[in-house]
Length: 217
Figure 1 (cartoon, rainbow, N blue to C red):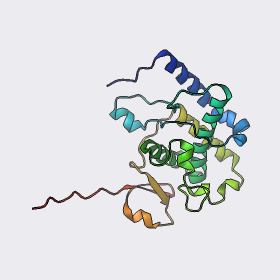
Figure 2 (figure 1 turned 90 degrees about the horizontal axis):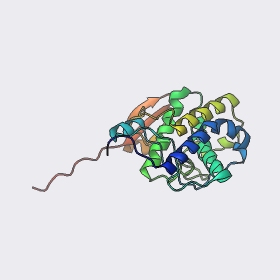
Figure 3 (figure 1 turned 135 degrees about the horizontal axis):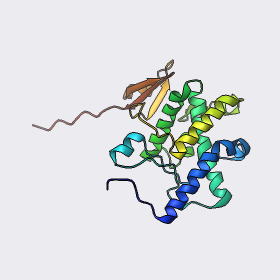
Figure 4 (figure 1 turned 30 degrees about the vertical axis):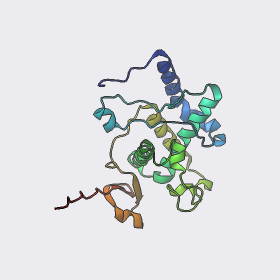
């Protein structure tokens, strides 16, 4: 069906509520963020800008895929998911500007949409943690225990809030990438993938195209 998704009155009310909360997340997390931990709340991915155009949809904020809990539980769960995205953007790409942090967000959201890396943002970001070799290195290399740059962390929080609220739709600057690595390393798994972009200090990669099977003669 073409055109914007039509929402009933209850869904519209929930959308307004959740969008209003996301606008306040960056401010609220300064107060509550330290006590918020990742939860298993079901949160679906915000459409990437290219996907929204392909399907005739408008960009939407991140919303729960099941009826959202009310009150403080809803706020805590939303803050947790926002915090996980902000942490990925900050620890993986701080100092690389908005483009670098949004590129990381693209990969996180794209992984979430595949359903193969976890059903929430926090599950995707912390996949494999705290064991060595986790999906996002900051989650298992001790980075979380180091002091933050207050201004850089604040910038990542605000940027993540804009992504959550749909105010800043994610594009495809990474070329549909699902992986990336720093430019100064070359992990073995990268040889099995195709380079799609370089942004800041990261090389982005996507799955290699499969060779078509030859029919038996």
